Image (cartoon, helix red, strand yellow):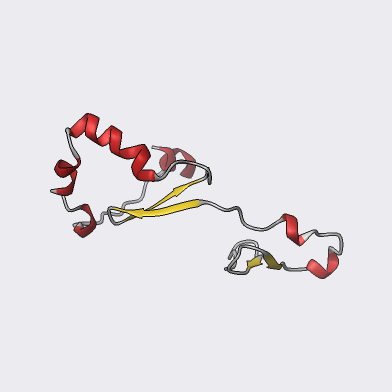
Length: 104
């Protein structure tokens, strides 16, 4: 896995294995610059990422909220969310600061 911006490359375990000009930084402790572990789950056709690797499983966190709002999980199942597809994509130019547009 490589960052296209910085050019740093990582192995499948997230360890930093290469960095541009690393030979000019002999004191670069590669073991301290590996990728962070994340809690990742697939549910309802989506990939969910939680920065807290010690967090409870997604279903344990979300199911009580779904039940509170919809009454039961069967209501959600009827939507068959995993089979939904993008119906239409619209692109348009906006004269705006990119940060303002991204946040809103």
